[in-house]
Image (cartoon, rainbow, N blue to C red; front, side, top):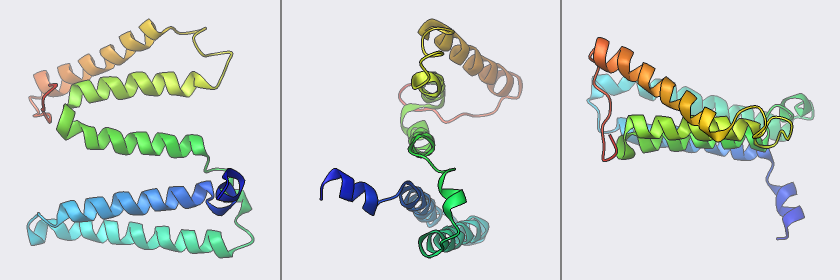
Length: 157
């Protein structure tokens, strides 16, 4: 398939629906190791999410009135959702603070990337680094030091 045919075959909404279903199935498999009474509520929520995502996909595919919803789902939004999924996967393996700092810094850069009037003109990379670091230090101060909550820790703190 060439690029044009592939683009016509897969719409951005199809990728979005597939992403939601795959993430839901991943979390469903994670609940299988939980105790039975503790896994009931997450499984109900995940079942409903998969069910309604499938219904939305069928409606979008077979309905001629779904044009207004297609404009809300873009490749940029799908990229943000994929980055959130990657962020959630990296927290237990890399560590909460480093992963959150990296995610915030890259998210700040990504939100201005295609806007030529904003990218690297109003804020520099150093400013984004400082803002991300301040957010992480504030979270650490409030939740880890003051409230003494336990954060997921891995090989990069």
